[in-house]
Length: 472
Image 1: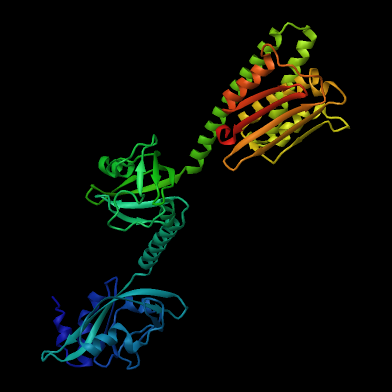
Image 2: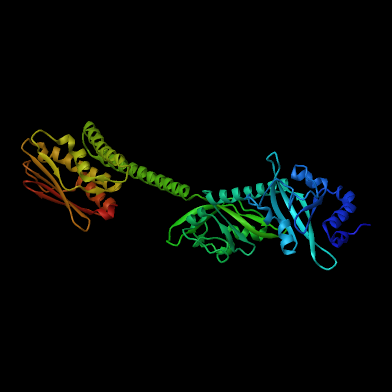
C-alpha cells in the first residue's frame, strides 16, 4: 500500500514527480482536484479533475505554471487575487498549512467556480520544505445555496424590520432577544435587549382595565404552555401614560432538543378600531338618551296642551307650534353634529315667525355655545314666552315691543332678559299657568337654572340664568 510519506520524502522536483506518479492511478479516481508544486511554486503534477476545474490543458513540469493552473483567481469576496497571495504561495512562504480557504477561479470561457483549498506543506527527511500539495473541491453550488440562504435570511430580517406590525422575540426565560422599529414605536420606548422581560410595554392591562402581571401576558402563556396563542386582546400603556389596544399572536420557538427555547410575538394594533367602537357605543347611547328625552318632552307638551280647557283647534295649533319650536332647535343641533348650538341662532330661529318690518323684536347678545340638552330646553322656553307675548303681551298690539338680550360672565354664567313693553297692562296671575310651570320646571330640571318672572304693569320681564358648565 502506498504511503503519503513518499511525497514528503522526495528531495527534489524530480523526486516529487516520481512520488506523485506512484500515486497517480489512485488520485485519478478522486472526485477532488489534487496538484503538487515544488519549493519555488512550479507545478510538478496534477490529476485530471483539477485540470477540469481550471478549464484548460496544463502541462505539469513545464516550468511555466506556478501556484495554480487557473487563468485568473479572486478571493472569496470577488476581488482579484495575486497568485503570490494564493493559498499555495502562502504555504510555500510560511511552511504552515492552509485549511478550508475559499477562492474563486475563472475559466477561459469566463465561467467562475468557487473552490475550497486545503494546502499541506511537504518536508524532506531533514525537515526542509520541498513543496506543497493542494486538494481543491468545487463548492460553487454549495456557495450559491449558502448565499441564497443568507440572502433570504437578510430578506427575512428586512421584512421584519420594515413590517408595520410590531414583532419581537424572547428566550425561554422571557428576556427580549430582538424587536423591530414598529414594536418600539408602539410601546413608546426602546427596551433593553436581555433585560426587559416578556414585553417592551411600560405596563399591561386586561381588556376590562385590570392590571396584567407580565408573567400572565400572552407571550408568557405561549412559552409556558408550548402552544401558540391567537388574537389575545391586551391593553398596553406607554411611559407618557397613553394607552392602546393590541391583538397578540405569540408562537413558541422549539430548539433542536424539542424543548421550547423562546417565542416570537406579533402585535396587531387595534387602538383605532377600539376607539371607533367606543365612539360608536357613545353615539348610540347618546342617541338613545336624546330620543328618550325628546319623546318625554313631546309627551309632556301633549299632556299639558290637551289638558287645557280651550277650543280643540286652538289647542292643536298650540301643540303643533311647540313641536315646530322643538324641531327648530333640533335643526340647529344637527347642523353642528349634535355637539353644540349657538344661542343667537336658537333665538333667531324660534322668534323668526314673530319678526316684522318695524323690528319690534331684536334678540341681541354675544355668541354663546350651548350643549344639546340646553339648546333644546332654551328653544322651548323662548317659544313659550313668544306664544304668551303674541296672545296676551307686547306682540298682541302693533305698538308693542320685545327685547331679548343676554350676556355671559367669565365664570360661565349666562343671564338672558326677556322684556316686553307697549302691550296691554299686565296683572299678576292668580295661578301659574302651563307656560310658567313648563319654563320653571325645564330650566331647573335640564339646565340647573332658574327663571324670575316680574309681572310689571307696563310689560312682562323674565330673567333666565344658568351656567353653561352645568349644561355642557
